[in-house]
Image (cartoon, rainbow, N blue to C red):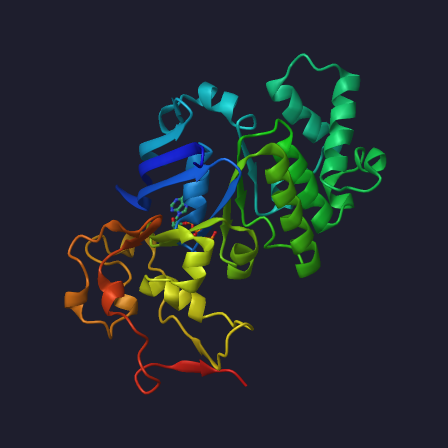
Length: 337
Ligand SMILES: Nc1ncnc2c1ncn2[C@@H]1O[C@H](COP(=O)(O)OP(=O)(O)OP(=O)(O)O)[C@@H](O)[C@H]1O
């Protein structure tokens, strides 16, 4: 049986806007197991990064409710000093943009060395140097002994991302959060970085939370997938089930909006509208209903819950039972040439 590393229960992350709090992550529950990649997918603004930052305890001004259980500890209830002990040690994070996350004024070796020191103060200078070299080699940086003394701006985007990964894994974290780790990279470098993350997962037996909006990346990397919409999880399943038997209308719309060379497909579905802003999110009923207006109101549950419809396959709302795409005359479709 899969060994649970992280269990999130009813997490609600709210930001204060003027005089009120608005939940960007709203009642999210999920688990991350050892040696698995859990992908979180969804459109821009659906709350993926807010979720990742909550797990890392990086929100300083947000209101966090619910539990984030790691072993016998509750990350959601930790003090800043307790958080500092787990962050960078048990929990590592690869950010979207290494250029804004790395210190531009510090040699990369020094930055990685600082991360090592945070959790192992007894390392001598020479031990640190050896460890940094080892990490740079591990993430596939050529001429590591030269790169160790370079500044971030002297490296290519792919190399900078590898440096960030080296920092994230410096203390062999059990849980690694990767927030759009390849978005800023071109496709060949992207696949090398994904391969590297996969290799490290197997070597360290870590659980990886991979945040992405790229379904190709999900298909390649994920063991399980959680689909987020408007702060909530609308579907969770193993990757095969999600691609072969998606149920929630939002998941189906996402999958139908990308070209797939494996199946005969001459039309792409256009998901109408956008994720509403935080202040305008509908908090009652099915949050996706405004974007599928052709589905009768009665198809939606009054209080949509995430229900397990088959072992390991969870879906929110009941509207999936009545959902199909409208015919061409009813909805605009984009015809591939
Ligand atoms: N510090 C903040 N204060 C107020 N609102 C915020 C804050 N951070 C995020 N939000 C809002 O919370 C919602 C979710 O944002 P989040 O960045 O988590 O989305 P995302 O799914 O990660 O998007 P992207 O893929 O573009 O990174 C958005 O409406 C965003 O504007």
